[in-house]
Length: 252
Image (tube, rainbow, N blue to C red; front, side, top):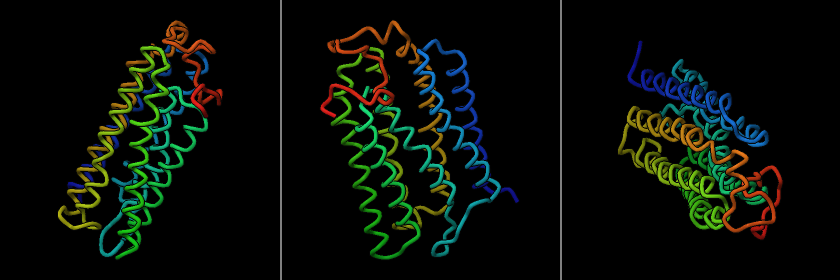
């Protein structure tokens, strides 16, 4: 029997496939530096993993029952694999060092893992896990709006603009997730399971596929010409990915 949830998950998978197509056009048609083309490969994880996860969920694979509520395990596996790339590549676009990218990604992973603990537990433990996961999210907002803008200020204009697009895309959309979780059956119960599925699927597609599109549109920020167009720093080519070099004049 085809249900609204199955249709929603199937459309979610198709939306992610569109992201895969956009990524391929980005990678195959880019004239970015060789090093940055290697970094583009990581972006394939975002829509690719999500497309598979949503296809399997549409086939009713990977669900467990928690307190009478069907919970999709694969959604959390998807987030555990894709959100570090989403937040990590935004930091890379800003020109952050490996160490900075590392702690930001670690906070993101902690947010997902502790959030999962909030799903499979009950009572006070669930509330504590949800609160801890929310604190991790606040830590990511601090990184996006308090730490990375200072790093991005030293980048070339095109590179800085890409970071700002990704910064706001991630920062604004991700606030939806804890709100929907809290309103759903595992939170205060204001929204039924089907409503949570529809909302999360929509936000997930919007968070991932347009992200890949934005990188594709701004791919010229990583050409040799753009990478040597500095706005103040002269100790190295501005566009050199700090995530690969491990060094940046940011105190890290």
